[in-house]
Amino acid sequence: MNLDVRTTDLRALNSLTKYPSIPTYHELDPKNGGLLDTAVPFTGPVLATEKVDGTNSRIIQLPGGDYLLGSREELLYARGDLIGNPSQGIVENLKPLAEALPPVTGDLIRVLYLELYGGKIGGHAKQYSTRGAIGWRLFDAALISGYAGLLAAPPQEISAWRESGGQPWADEDALHAIAAEAGVELTPRLFTLDAAELPTDLEKMQALLTDRLPATLVALDESGGLAAEGIVFRTPDRAVIAKARFQDYARTFKRRNR
Image (cartoon, rainbow, N blue to C red; front, top):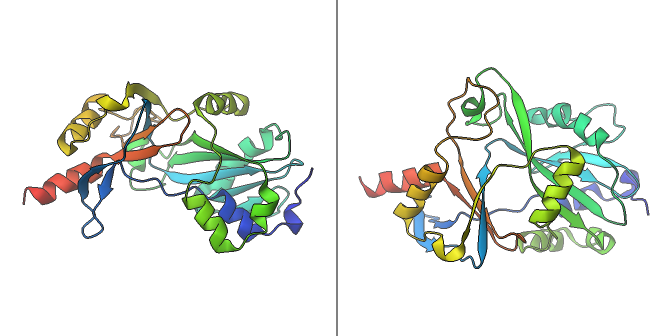
């Protein structure tokens, strides 16, 4: 089956394939942005990966061979367009990759979520390179079947479906297979531990970050500052996911020690 970009509701497709909000491992206080003592509950094995600080990018592969490129919030380019939105260099850098990808098989939409980083992308860019180098890492993929009904749903229904975990995610094994097929690297896999070993104490989590990720593993050359942004924790089936950023813990303790 083909899905024709020209006859598809692009607002619905955009909403369907946006990357959802990922909670912080320790809950954020809505009053001041500091961290609270409440932590996301995990069970079983927990995989830790480096959180790369760049711009969230999408390659949306449609049945029939068409594809679109997007930022986290908007679609920027569709296969065959003469002009693409230059926002943050997503189209310029990821179009060659999208063109080289093998088409999806079966009646599904496949979305590859990549962090495009370095250059002048984000406040952390100089930690990866001060020479303008740009790179990308795959951090997630969604495999959406039964999309016809979803594309016909009201916008608020699609958004609610997405933010409540409706998107069907590739598990860890499938993500490795997708990365190998696409010829892209995943965000670094750091370690796996049992959920019982995952600290729920703020100080101990800050210590874990410092101990397990003293420097970024995705530097683009030797010129960068090498500071890492943080760690993403996930179950191998991606049913539970949360992020822990160095800056959130530093900000929290600075406020508490005033």
